[in-house]
Length: 204
Image 1 (cartoon, one colour):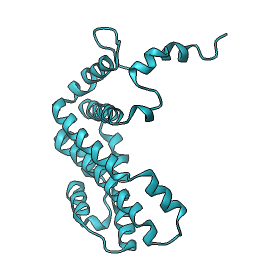
Image 2 (image 1 turned 45 degrees about the vertical axis):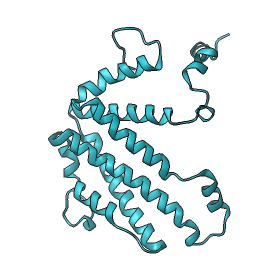
Image 3 (image 1 turned 60 degrees about the vertical axis):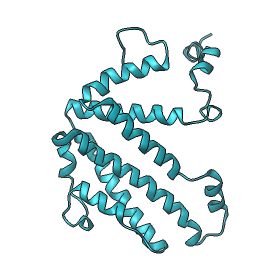
């Protein structure tokens, strides 16, 4: 965990310490990262669909058309992952070169990963089987690129990815209703002496 110049007394202090150690070190404007993740997290949350929809799909009859909306939501989610990976290239420039060395599937038609990703996101599918196929292509590309992220060894790249993960987690947490965040709100933890309780688990 990062440590700032002063003791961490709040979630805001902890976030500031993370930003100092990672976001600043990434060399990318913090405002830019926040703007990118604010949009992506919002769209990812919207792409998940509703719990009731998923339940009805699960309990309903097994048929192709019944699962259509599941693949629609899943494709939207994959699109946001692809946009995130495109953002790595735009923000880090040549320091993201390892992503361009990935051997892409034949259906990318010798395009680089950015062009292939954008092409997939503009495609539309007609019918259930076509939607499944398009989803699988997007998921395959995301998986290939995600595995390659570990090859970005430059300290700026590592700091950048950590910063984006921290910012996205904070944005998602703030967007979650307090009744659904498992009592992790700061005031709730302080009121229940959360850290003292956690630290004393197993003690007599």
